[in-house]
Length: 112
Length: 116
Image 1: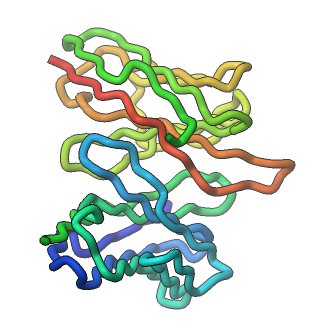
Image 2: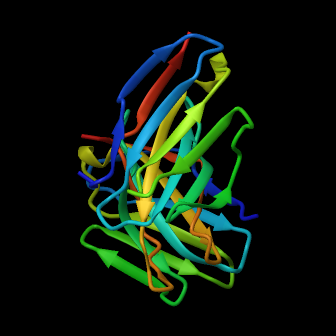
Image 3: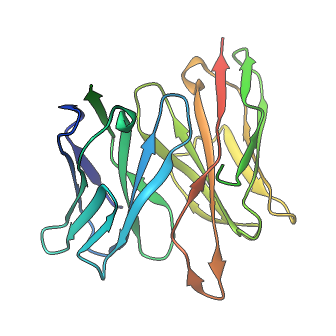
């Protein structure tokens, strides 16, 4: 099956700085890559996603890039704010089954 | 609010017991997925149902079972509970439209299970 690795496991940045979280996947058949934000004790919330036919997608301060050749994708958050503090999970889906393979998460802390 | 509902929110029980977690998908969604999240762990896929049929199986223990009913709600049954089963259990839903699958999964608020 698919294997998704995520780095770093923790990330601390100053308010206003940028944050980058990177994920790699193993199966070249994976074709959908969502990112979820999870606050403590809450549900994972989809913040952005990208499909394999697109190299980059942006939504306000959040962007995701995908390199299919290298099999990695990254989340970029610019102008970070304290409310961006949370655990971020990357994921990938394989083929048509739809199940998500998650990375182990990145605890992002934004200091005011 | 994702539109996915789960009950109960919290469940405290003893080892050896059996519990049932319930999930109602977003209106019109045909697929339901169950995930387990243990303390300091990521999200582990358990099982997927699509329109009443089992679609995919992940790291689900034999003590666990699930089903999806004609009204599309789903139940996850956990039996012979052990301390290690304490976790957050999430369900998510997505929809397949006439063979064109939409990948986006929306998560419910979760059920926190504590086994004492």
